[in-house]
Image 1 (cartoon, rainbow, N blue to C red):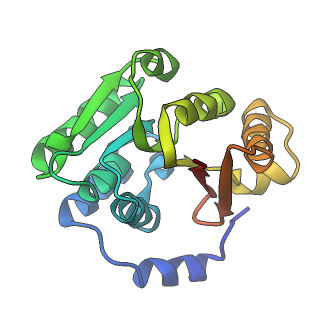
Image 2 (image 1 turned 180 degrees about the vertical axis):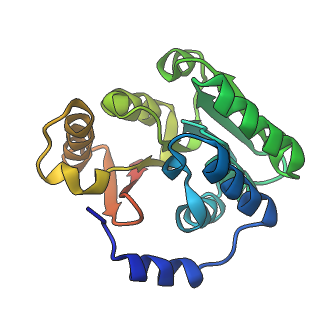
Length: 211
């Protein structure tokens, strides 16, 4: 099921600031060449990620799930010149395409790809980060949330994508949907944070760590 009416989604897209031309080309190549191109963040969410990074004053960002690099570049655009996005990706094909676009971007030097299973990578990272964006394998969402929250400074943001999962969270029955529902429930009852679950694209949890 569609979370937002397609015509309204298009209206929102048309009335959102355009992404840089490089991101537009990245989107086009992803849709032309990659399997599951719907995993791409896209303009609406990408511009939101950039604005959240910018307005929160984030300087050090953690991303779980690079895919072809659209979201990492969007966030890198919103942080200072000496900022850093550490992005975790398990698929070397995805990472290679992302790196090609990072190399072509004036913001690409702010981004570092860590290749390998995200939970293993997370064990080697040092706190604090100012913001985290989780958009990796769904079954590990509860574990990713807990680890990201440990690494985020007080007052920092944890953003989690696909948290409405095409509406399937209303009646979770498979392992991915059950994991997404579990993390939503965990966040809603977590006294360490405050949050809002947005109906942007496929659902976006915006979580602020108290303190």
